[in-house]
Image 1: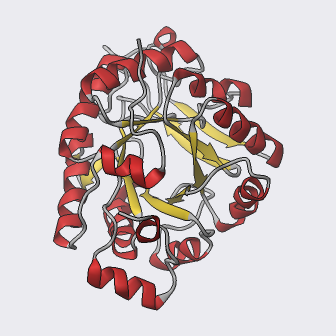
Image 2: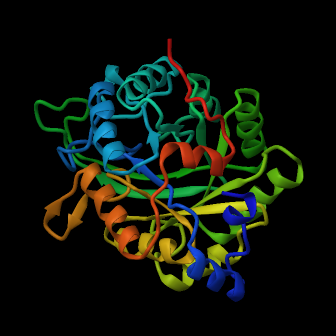
Length: 322
């Protein structure tokens, strides 16, 4: 698999037709098993403890995921919120690596409500191979449910109306910290205006190709989860980059299928979507199984972790946690 087979102009008709005829590069599937806002109070299948995260990651890995996106949770708060401690990420990553010897570990730097940039970037010191890097502000408005026993950490419902601020300087700080730790950034783009911040990192040489862009569709304050909005995002993809797509909630199947068709990659999991279909709660494994099945029906091979490592140009040797 050569570089030109992985990196190409996604909006050029002739290139798309050539790859549709000859075969697109293998599909990289990321699973986001848990998240930074909601917990098991919304879906009992959502893992919170390090042990449960490792167990659920293994099931998704066996189903076809080659990357896991990790949010370590805070044991001191009953795992109701995300941790800002490097040691919590290290423990979670270590258990995941023991369960999945070659999966690519991707730690969040999105963190949780109210965290500083320094707290959010603490996960990068826990030896991941990738880390998310938000390229602009994100606004959240939601009601967090009361956590009923045996869950702890929130004894009554709580309304959240919050903006996670990110500016040029902070994105540069995240990128420099990741480079110091040999961690490849995954650039999270919520709307096309955030390409300004991502391109600044490219122009300053703070990130290395191939650049990984992740288009988050359907989050509040972000782009609508529609075909036209996704095409607009893909049109903005810089040279020497690949993209993957998140579809939030009920839009996940349609938007991820469109990414498969367009030659992109996908992220699924309970962080982004709690339901398999209306009225039926999902598991991480069932969401991975569905997108793998769709990919195969559409003629896309699903990437192994080894193939994904070559495509992303990261170490072929998985990170270790002695």
